[in-house]
Length: 164
Image 1 (cartoon, one colour):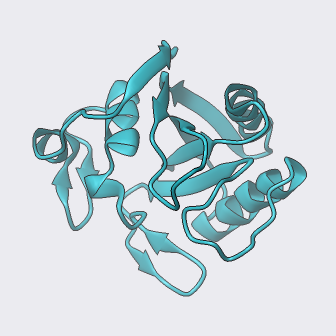
Image 2 (spheres, rainbow, N blue to C red):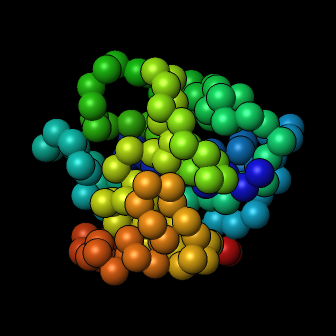
Image 3 (tube, helix red, strand yellow):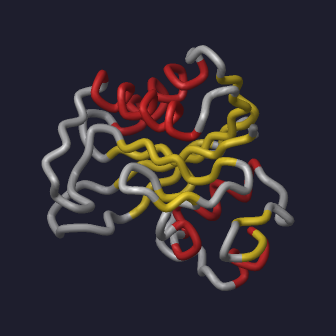
């Protein structure tokens, strides 16, 4: 199964945090990296007076279930010092979001797929477009190409070119 993962950080050397998370994800059993986007600097969505984020998207082929993959991503966050305080969109050492898992649609207390907000967030859509076809179908929203046409590029600054 192909899954897409959003990576983000705005604390403790965010570029290094995202790169280390990429390595940790690629090293997971039952996971094989298929692509990695450029790194982008973006303004935070949440509370004011926090540092800018560094974001990227990673494509993986996986044998893990969506719940197993989510659990492994949360373990990587914890290993990198992420503490879940309950503050929505606050500063984070590392934020790993399971964005898509094939064409699965899941609505449970533990997991929502596709990830909520994916369709409106340039810091997700533009990195995703670097490693996925514009024809990628996002359940409940249409194709990636359609979403990009409705989502301005504003506020993104590409820091490092990805290796797709």
